[in-house]
View 1 (cartoon, one colour):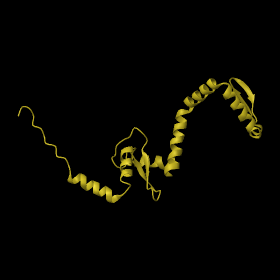
View 2 (cartoon, rainbow, N blue to C red; view 1 turned 90 degrees about the vertical axis):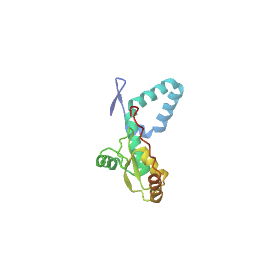
View 3 (tube, rainbow, N blue to C red; view 1 turned 45 degrees about the vertical axis):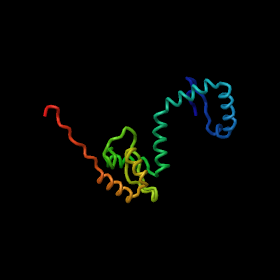
View 4 (cartoon, rainbow, N blue to C red; view 1 turned 60 degrees about the vertical axis):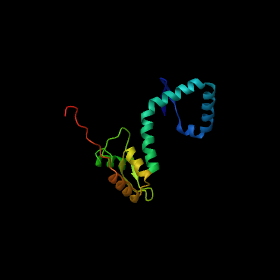
Length: 151
């Protein structure tokens, strides 16, 4: 196999690399230790070059790891919900959160950060949510309408 490195064609043998991985790692570490500024600049350039790809990958990976929701499930639900929160119907500047039942792991829908946290604060307890609803209903603030200056 031939690779192009900094304009030069270089031979590369994956089997040889695998057989001598420790040797290559040691050599690479020695170079990084001897050239800390260049190493830092290389890491920074690589980060900037691949930042969007890495963020997208980590978002999908972390969602799957934390909630069990695959990217396909997320995208389908996003289309089903027209890209808005399932509760408040608002759009979000960040990605909608994949809401799931913490006991069963069942994926319920996509929520904005506020609605997702709200359910979390109520511990997904229907009784508490009903009590909160009754509380708000019984304590609605009636704002008096100000009369205009000319009347």
